[in-house]
Image 1 (cartoon, helix red, strand yellow):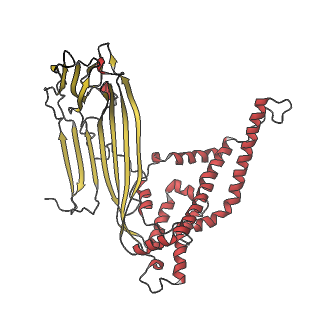
Image 2: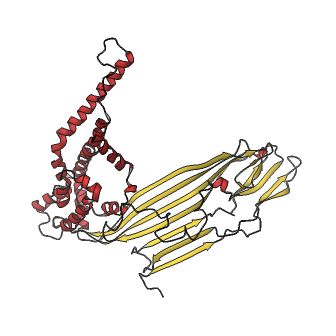
Image 3: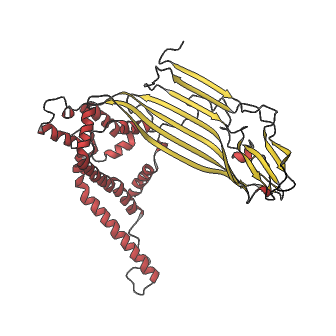
Length: 467
């Protein structure tokens, strides 16, 4: 018998709702001799025999926990693969012919023909031992990248609401930032005037065709870096100062209420959805009917007000959440102390809020080229962690990531009947869930191929600016 906290592995596989060799009845087609006569069924719509085999599968590895409620977050790894629409009848309705003397009382079910599902890249669409594997070799479990570090930084309690110490130290860079920006505007204006002069081709003009451009790739790269590492943080600091000025008392009450207590925080680290078309087409017309990638395969052309169509897309949805139960302690926020309301502690609370403390994290951030060290080894993350522990006495009873991803191949059909347009879609999917626990932000691997477009752009600009 399993004890609490012990791992367990479970597997489940299922068939489609039809029976192998037995067609699925979708409905009937009816006709009448005139608009007052009763409808008489004259043929039945059905699928070919259902393809036998496993069309749904799930594998799960987790731990047995006490509950409910389940408050502990142990390791979890789950993968589901399936084609839930196969063999199921949807969109059932009454669709009338343009002549008013024929109608269909029918539903629809998707075809399993690989032509419509983006053949040949359909290896993940049926449950197999490979895509139901719970091991690290299964490619359908997404990489955690640096989600652990990002999740820890976003979920942990925030005592400093502005970066006053770093802002003050970086003011020495303001003249250089202004100079770089001014030079950029001057060079851009020089080049624009040159273009205008050349277009007009004014005799004796000031700008000659062979005169070089001032806004070179190196200059553009310098402007980009000046914006990313100069003006963007500068404006962000000004905004945070304004926020503390207007909401300082609210932040002080919140930090004081939670000081020394275990508080659960849950944040969304990342959420995205992408869609890529892998196929599309219209119903194949033969003057009598349209052939579609769903059953009934052939539908009379007189039922449609315009040609039907279909498309197939790859859709990927990813959501990452970080959950932790944190505890911190700062004496200036301890309401049980008799000198809580003293002028010294009141001032120190604002020193903390404005980020004016001399901490390992703030000292590291003002070091020249410290951001470059973060690119190579994430040194700043370690320094932040040390600062959290030794300055704010921050600890976590637990911390884990919840990573959910659904990848599906979606077949969509639009049937513009005279009776009204019907839109249907079916998914063949791979769904994964992971819960990865840790006591610090360093239990998660960082893969360089997970760099964001902004990071890649900064890296490229650094390379250009060295020309």
